Structures are given as structure tokens and as C-alpha cells.
Image 1 (tube, rainbow, N blue to C red):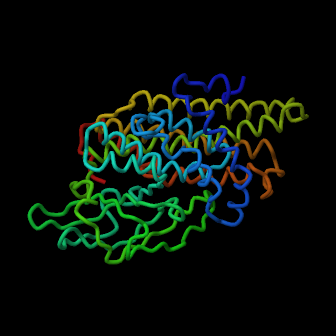
Image 2 (image 1 turned 135 degrees about the vertical axis):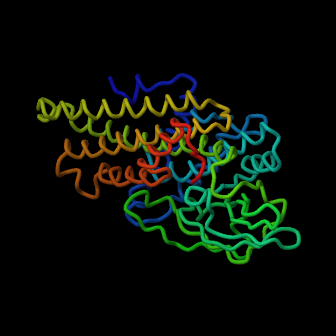
Image 3 (image 1 turned 180 degrees about the horizontal axis):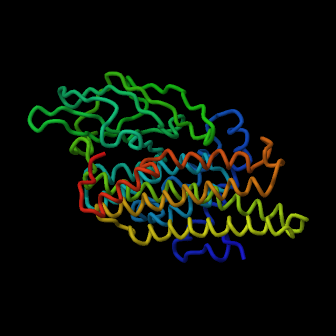
Length: 385
């Protein structure tokens, strides 16, 4: 029995998996070329826009599909089987819309307008918070009607096609001290430029270039929130509770796809009757079951409408750590099973083994995850980042 068919079904959580498979198949043929050339997965975004998939997490009453955190995560796991770069890139848009839906349910300013634009205008949202979410790379200065911001944002996935950037800047408020301002900035605004820096070992099609902002004016209405500097406050805890399961799902999907590829290449061959190969296949199945259980457990514990509780961050990060360790090892084991043929660039397995390693670099790192969880368990201050 395949862990990627009968035993991976999860009831309502699988609702959008067939859609992700249908969409992913439409641009899978371009994945190897974008990986080879280090170019953005533009064909994928043509399909994503046309299909309405960008509105996957937008509430149904606003014209979206109303997907939950878990439904988005499992849909992204399926898409990653077809094109990992496309799945990871659009995950960054989807987790922003998920959090936007969370804000919309609480009638927070700007949330409904943003979500309606995703549906009506098919805009793509970029998040730059992964690298500097508590201590932003960039500063804001108060001016009439808003702020002037300067800074450089890295790992800004999807910027070749995106429309609006959700990002953060440090502001020294003369009355309350240093703050973090969360802002929505059009990528076509004066003073915004994209520097094409993305030339990496894996995930080469995500277009995660740098964005440089030079004296960019941001109106007061574009400021979504003000938060304390250097800490995980409740809104940021809620953001992470949405983002990490969705991002993690991508890497689970890569590894599960590798597993199925190895099985297909091994069944009916002489290697299949080799006890050492049988053991390695069993090891892959074990590790990927543990990985999927970790993600499903985190999704269940966090819930569809998470409260901003620090334990949700712990749960999400621990699931990511488990998948990082189990999925990477599973992919390396697959290389051992397939042997030298998998070492060629034309092999799908070779690309997946490079792509899977990006999981280590999404914050928190595996080691920081343990330290943070330990602080929370011991009742120590764990909100400083």
C-alpha cells in the first residue's frame, strides 16, 4: 500500500488536492528547464492566475475557495510533486492570504480589500517577513501623510510576477520608542527595484530575488499594523501559525514524490529482491509516515482559526523540524537505492534532492526550534527573536 495514496487521505483536508494535481500537471514539463536555467516559473503563474488558485484561501463569501490552513498545506504538498519551485513560490502568496482571511474574520482594517483584489484582479502577494520579521532590514521615517522607507529585502519569492509586497520596517517612534511597521507596498511604486540575485543550489525557479527600496513613500493607509520591535507579538504568532504548515507541506510533497518515483523504478527489478534494498525502502516509508503524521498533528493542534498562542509556534516549528530531518534523509536514501543513474542531471531525483534542502533555511532553523520549544516548556521568555 502506498503512503501517498490510500493512507495519506485525510477527509476534508484533501478537498483541494485533486485541483492542485490538475494544475501542477499543466506546468510540470517546464520544471526541469527552469531548474537548469535558474529562471522564474512564469508558465506556472499563468496557470495559477487563470485557474483562480491564487484565491484558494480567500473566504467563499468574497469569491474565493475558502481553504483552511490544513487544506492549503496538503494542496501544496501535491503541487510540489509536479513543480517544487512553483509550489514553494505560491505558498508565500497563499499564507499571506490565509492570514488576510484571519484578519478579515476579525474585521481588521484593509483585510477585505486585499482579499477582494486577489479574487478580482488576481494580484500576487509577496511576503518578506521570513528573513527579518522581528528586526526588519530597513527603516521608516515619518513624513506628511505617511512614511519614507529605505531598505533591502532578501528571499522575496515570486517578485518577477508579483504585485504587492507585505513587508516590515523599523520605526523609531519619538513617543513609544522602536517599533515594527507592517506595510503593503506596490512593487511598481517609485523607488522600488528588483535585484536579480537568485542563483542557488535548489528551488531555482522561485524568483526569490532581492527588493531594494529607496526613499519609497508609504501612505498612512498602507500601514497595516504597528508592533513591538524584536519580539514575537500576537499578530506575528498568528502569521507563523498560518505560514509554517503551508511552507512545510511543500517539502513533504517533494519527499513523497521521490518515494513514489523510487518505488516505480524498483518494482519488478532485481533490486526489489535484495534484502538491503527492501530495508531502505522500508526506511523511506517509515520516515515519510512520521513526517506526514507530524504535519497532520500540527494542523490538528493549531486548528483552522488559530489563536495567537506561543504554543502554536512551537507546534508548527516542531513539525517543520521533523519534516526537515525525515524528508531530507528519505531523499538521500532514495539516491542510495537508485544508484549512479540518479546522479545525472536529467534525473528527476537529482533535482528533488537539491530542492528538499531548502527546508533547513526557513526560520526557525532546526536547532533554534529546539531551544525555543525548551524555553516555552520551562516557562521562560520565548518571544524575543
